[in-house]
Amino acid sequence: MPLISIITITYNAQDFLERTLKSVRNQTSTDFEYILIDGGSKDNTMDLVKSNKELFTVIISEKDEGLYDAMNKGLRNASGEYVWFMNAGDEIAEMDAIEKLKDLSKSEPDVIYSDTILVNNEGGFVGLRTEILPHKIPDKLTWKGYNKGMLVCHQSFIVKRTLAPKYIENNLSADIDWEIKCLKLAKNVVVYPGILSKYLEGGTSHQQLFKSWKDRFLVLNSHFGFFSNVWNHIRIVLRADIFNLFRISKYLK
Image 1 (cartoon, rainbow, N blue to C red):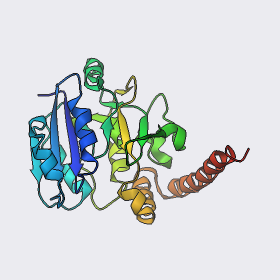
Image 2: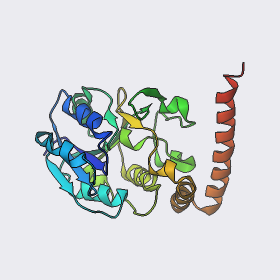
Image 3: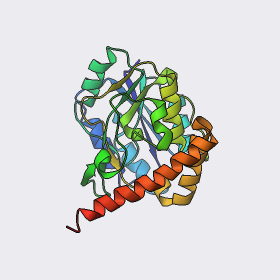
């Protein structure tokens, strides 16, 4: 059994996939399996995959019912002790990440997490997620900290496979729901000593902003209750306005 199942979801990802493959290929440890789930790409994504087929343990390309259906398919095909989603355009931030994770695994953590580097379409550095967004990662991560949204970027959240639930489908905030459910089950949550991932800005939730907010409200409502959720969403809006005003004011001095 490999230490980690790295899972990449793709659909028409020819412009971004190579940087993801490179970050996996450059790992100093090979104690992982690499699973690719493609939604039936119509561009050259699968040509790129086939030219790097020695990197993969599992390759599946077929029509699916969307992102979270594909991610559930990845979970079903995983056999590692831990699962780690690294989608097209995202990168493992450090070449020795698997080595560090092997050392951390000796203490048998249920969840491992870190901050995230945000990158643009060209892979250029945008900044640390905690500096750009009003999401500050606590020293002790618990599910209750998600009452105002996503604390840890999905690509910087690694969980023991036996604890990983199915993703809810047809909801753009299924990743928040998944992390909360993982943390509810986790007994040992540890911080990774460094940065786990580089995350490509954008994505489905940014492209469908209204549905994303609606879906997030439904997810958080299921975990925190209606009245608490309404109050927290008011705080989210106020926090976002204050945070953006602060960022803009730096350039008006």
